[in-house]
Image (cartoon, rainbow, N blue to C red; front, side, top):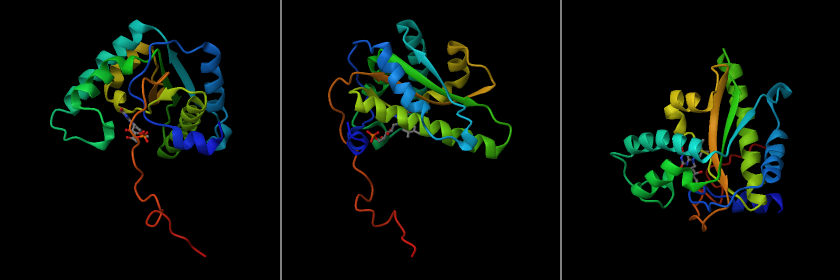
Length: 196
Ligand SMILES: Cc1cc2nc3c(=O)[nH]c(=O)nc-3n(C[C@H](O)[C@H](O)[C@H](O)COP(=O)(O)O)c2cc1C
């Protein structure tokens, strides 16, 4: 798939088929992530690949509690696509039934500058991951909501304090086509300022 096609085809997928993702496909997608640019070429991202149903369920219980709390007084919002609150809670508790969940880590930093560089580099890797997955026919959903339950997430996945959790994504074959979330300013009239 050509890169512009992948960029336009990518969606936040919140419902998955239970079919497993072959390990070679996961590695191919993570290789694309690993080819991201990084500040000072430190390539300091790491990927935790979760395929255990029990572990994904445990992560889902943690995330569901967060979503329940977070959406208690929440008006319908484009943040969760076209899902109702109940559907969103169901997504949270099972990560949409995805057979794989990937957690992206970076080195913990002791200065704001380094932290910013680490997060930006790992985010570049994350976007590569999402686009590569799309190109191979898989769905993903960039998520930082689960980080609200960081302490429990760290315990479940044995993530040490030397690592910062950047984001989480399910990975699997999409069950259906999620609604397209329209772009703000698609004609780029407000978002672009030309100088020169
Ligand atoms: C930094 C970041 C954090 C996000 N966190 C969550 C999340 O916690 N849960 C979720 O369901 N979607 C999350 N999303 C997905 C967005 O809601 C989604 O990208 C947005 O609604 C646009 O839809 P699209 O990705 O289909 O274009 C996140 C996206 C980004 C970039």
